[in-house]
Length: 229
Image 1 (cartoon, rainbow, N blue to C red):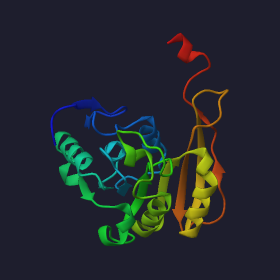
Image 2 (spheres, rainbow, N blue to C red; image 1 turned 45 degrees about the vertical axis):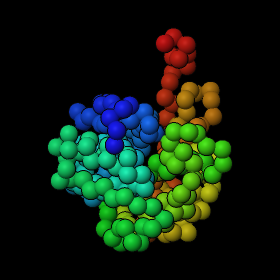
Image 3 (cartoon, rainbow, N blue to C red; image 1 turned 60 degrees about the vertical axis):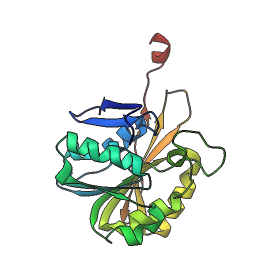
């Protein structure tokens, strides 16, 4: 890909660096929070659906994952992901696959991962941003596709963690249960204590039993912190 707009950033909380481009959607706070939220056993095999530049994958490797497979339909972000893996000495611990998440049966081995993660497009197809349309809107794979792919790929008792808009919580819960993924942990994110949640983090277990734990809300900014800064 062209070097124009290319930059090298640090991933927070670890020593890894990541290539990003102004022409592609960059990783955000959502990705960092998702990587920290997901329950990860040491030495786990992880799948990131819609991996983009692979920020979540790199963060999970820093936490102790043994191997991460990333799937994305955009070859440009996959090129950045591979370059980041090479820069950080993680080539042997990563595999990046180009393809549509809806074609998961042809692209991914069944029941082969301990954990799947996804920061899927938040909004249904409609008016779209110029940069990162597929990352933010359901241009190609939709929420149902991501959940079905996770259910296919994780082993029995494996986990799937994702983030999504609160307005799509009920839809997400229904889709998870339809695929045999039982919601187990839920956390709402707030920009400050006086504002409604702008995002939720949710983890489900394949073949898990009933019982959902709602964790304390995560407030990103203390009251008045933005004004002081």
